[in-house]
Amino acid sequence: MKVKTYMDCFFDECVVSDSLVTIRKYILENRSAYLIVVDRTGAYIGLLSSLDVITDLSGAAHVSDIYEAVTPVDENMDIRKIKDGGLDIIPVINEKRFPVGVLRLKNILPALKHFGDLDSGSKKMYRKNLSAKYTIDNLIGSSAAMNRLKETIIRAATIRSTVLILGETGVGKELVAQSIANLSNRRFKPFVRINCAAIPENLLESELFGYEEGAYTGAGKGGNIGKFELADGGTMFMDEIGDMQMIMQSKILRVLQEGEIERVGGRYPIAVDVRVIAATHNDLEKRVEEGLFRRDLFYRLNVIPIIVPPLREHIEDMEELVLYYLEGFSKAMGIARFGVEPEAIEYLRSYHWPGNIRELKNTVERLTVMTGGQITLNSVRSILDLQEGSLDEENSLKSNSEMAERETIQKYLKRYKGNKNRVADELGVSRSTLYNKLKKYQIK
Image (cartoon, rainbow, N blue to C red; front, side):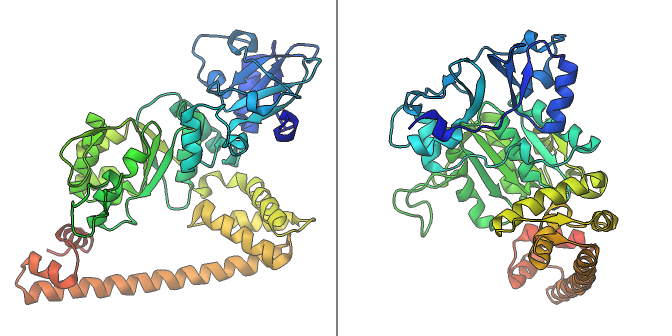
């Protein structure tokens, strides 16, 4: 189990005398989380974190002012002797002290699962398999908008405060959340995700906070812990928090204020140490004004707001994005040669991308399958024209569906003379859901 077997030979390095201004630009362009620091002869000296470079406020001018003298490992060392020093990257050197690669701790955890060399927290994370998958390296694009986003992510990772990620559907809000988690000092702790809009209102509380045995009919024997307890010590990503009902909003506010939860049916509070990263495609300020979202919870969440730009606002990244996805899909499909015509890129830039990055990724996958990895202008036209037609049809169906829903609500309101409890029962929805629809359709 030598280090060489598990070593990643691809790494970025800089010279100890390099200017921090130059290094900042390099980091943002190459999405580097760490750089190996060497002297003029190329011998290893230490490690430089992107966080230190981007957030340095001391007026340091050169790499020599802020690098860390991290102890490297020899390329012939047994990985079972490696100790977890709290870094997710460990430099590897040869007998001449020249850097030859890096070890990424998450990549060697599986090999060490039967040994007791890493700390119990890391092994616990491995068993639960609740780590954040994506890093800032997965944020593709070198436009000004994307570089600003990366800088904000790096700054957000250095502090514990709650983050609120805002952006349209499909822009990659969870990718941003995972990038923050993977750059933070909680990166070896659990990353737990929950979609607040996907879980029925009556189940969300037990899903978040857990329940005690006998708490309700059907509650499992021995009870069950919830997402917040799973995330203890780590990060909780609460997606689509703008769709959460008011009663649950008050319970989330308590968690953020007091740092404790109560299981359904429980008698005592349970302390949890969780950093919350929330996301929504909704305009929360507007929902606050409409009485659909608690103002105090909004302020509590909005400590570090991060707005993820839609694809149309960094369309200059199109070629980089297409080539990135094309390469990934081609390799997965066993396609050795792949490419894209410049005219195809231009046509992709002219499309409005209502589904943002998610739609682009799906489009490139379809194009890869359809063309065998050789994307042409004609293939792009045929796919996008088809998507445009489907979108028009979808919008028409949605419009008809909403019209029918509005008429149904009005019919029941008339039948029950404005008794909203009776109407909600007849429609099989909660009273709060009915109120939301009344406001949506402006029914008085």
